[in-house]
Amino acid sequence: MIHSFFIFDRHCNCIYSREYTNGDAINKTNDSDTAKLLFGILYSLKNISGKLAHTNDDSGFAPSNNTLKSFTLGTYRAHYLESMTGLKFILVSDTHIDNLQPVLWELYSTHYLKNVVHNGLSPVEFLAENDPYSKISNHNFIVQSDAYIQSLPVYR
Amino acid sequence: MSNDNIILPSAASLSTLSIADNPKSGFGYNPSLGPLSNTITPESSNILLNRKTLSLTPTSGNSIYDKNVNNKKINEINLSSLSFLFCEAVNWTHRNSKGIQDLETRLNGLGYQVGQRFLELIKLREGVKSSKREIKIIDILRFIHGTFWKSIFGKTANELEKSQDASNEYMIIDNVPLVSKFISIPKDYGNLNCSAFMAGIIEGALDSSSFHANVTAHSAPIDGVPLRTVFLIKFDEQLVIRESLRFN
Amino acid sequence: MKLYSIYILNKAGGLIYQNNLDPSLNRLTANDYLVLAGTLHGVHAIAAKLTPTIVGKDSTSTTSGTDPTANNALLLSTGKVQNSNTNKTGLGSIETDLFNLYVFQSLTGIKFILITSPNPILQKQHEQASETFRHLYVLYSDYVMKDPFYSLDMPIKSQLFDLKVGELAALV
Image (tube, rainbow over all chains, first blue to last red; front, side, top):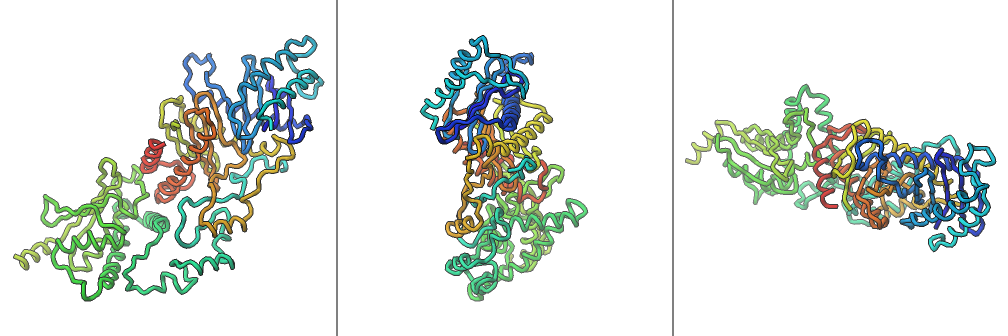
C-alpha cells in the first residue's frame, strides 16, 4: 500500500506532497512539519550511507557511489530516489513493499520531465515557502502522477 | 501527540520484553510491568498452586525452605540469580578491598565459609552408612573433584593433576568455572581471578576434613577455552609426612 | 547475510560498543563513530515523532501488547512473550546499495545496530536480522550485565563479550 509521495528540490524545500488515504479520496496536506522532519531524516541517513561505504576515489571530490534506497520508520517504508540534479523523490509505503525504485524513476523520467520540465510555463526553480510558486501546482502533473501511482498493483 | 514531546522517551511503547527460554516454573519479572508483574492475582495464584513446582518464596508449603535438608534430589537454582548475586558479592568485596591481592583473599574468605558448611551438608546427605571419612590425600582430592564438585556446581571438574615440581601440590582444572562464567577481567586488574571464591570453597572443605591446604585460582586459558582455571592446592608439608608415616 | 558491523548505543545515544567484523565498510575515526551513533539516535527519535503523521490522521497504530493485564495473562499462560524489540515507531532499517542497517531497541532503551550486506529480499533479511538481535541481546544480558566490572552505560570492554559476538557473527 502506498501512503504518500513527496518531492524535494535541491534547496531542501518540499515542492510537492501528496497523500493517499485508504479510501478513494485523495487529499493534499499542508503539513510542512512532516516534510521538514522527513527531509531531516533523509539528509542524515544519506550522510551515513555515504560515510560508511567505500569510495573508489580518495580525492574527496567524487561523491560516494553508495546510494540510499529506502528506510523503514515504524511500520512504514520510505523509498528514495535522487536525481543527478538534486531532486529527491520519496514514496512512503508499508513495509511489505521491497523495491519501488522503478516507480520512482518512472515518476521522475516521465511525469516530472514531461509535465514540469518540458512545460515552459511551469517553473523549475521553486521559490521559498509561503510563495504561490513554492510548490508544483501543475494540473497535468498532479492528475497524471496520481493516476500512475493508483494504477500500480502495489497501491492497495 | 503534542509538539512538546518531540523526543520520545527511549521506550515509546509498553510492549513486552520476551524471555527467550520457556521457564519451567515460576514467573519472570516483566520489566514492562514493573513490580506489578510479580503480584499475586487470583489467576496467577491459581496457576502457581496448580503447578507442581518448587518455589523459592515461601508462598506455599512447597517452598525450598520447607523441604527436608536431607534430600537427595538435586534442587536447582537459577544461574542468572546466582550470577547477579555473585556479581554483587564481587562488587562489595571490591569496594572494601585495598588491592587486587586483598580482593582475592576476601573472595577466598567468603568461599571458605561456604566450603566448610557445604561439606557438612554433603556428608549428611550421603548418609551414615555409605559415607566415610577420607584419610588419604588422593582420595579426598577425588572426592572434591567428583562428588563434591558435582553436588555444588552440577558437574565434575575437568581434570585432576599432580604437580611435577612439588610433592605437596595438586591441581584441579575447571574449563568453565560456574561463578565466573560471565565475568571478564579488565586488563588493568592484572591476573585477578574471581574463581578465588571457588578456591575458597575447596580450601574450606579441605580444612574441615583435616587436610590443611592453601588453594589459589589461576587463569590458564587455552585455545577455545578462555575461562579455563587451575585451582592450585598446596598441602601442608606435615600432611605429606603424615601420609608417608601412616601408609608406608 | 553477512555481518559488517555491530554497534551498541546506551539510552542517551552514546556509543558503548562497536565491533567492525568485516572490512567492507569504511573505517572512520573514533570521533566519527560517536557522531554516527548520535545521528542515528537522533534520527530514531525524530522518526518516532514522524510516524503517526506521515500517513495522515487515520493511522491507528496497533495498540496490542500495551495492555498490562492482557500482557500479564499471556505471560502467565504461555510463559513466553513476544519479540523484545520495542522499536515500533522509530527508525527500523536503512537499505542502501552497499549495506543494510537494522536498529533494535530494548525496553530499557539500549539500541543494537547491525550493519549487514545488502540483500534484495528484504523480508528474509529482516527475519535474519531480528534473530541475530535476539542472540545479541542474550549475549549482552549475560556477558555484560553479569560482569561485576562493568558499570551501566559505560563502554563495554569485556573480552568475553567480544569473543561471543565473534562466534555469533561467524554463525550468521
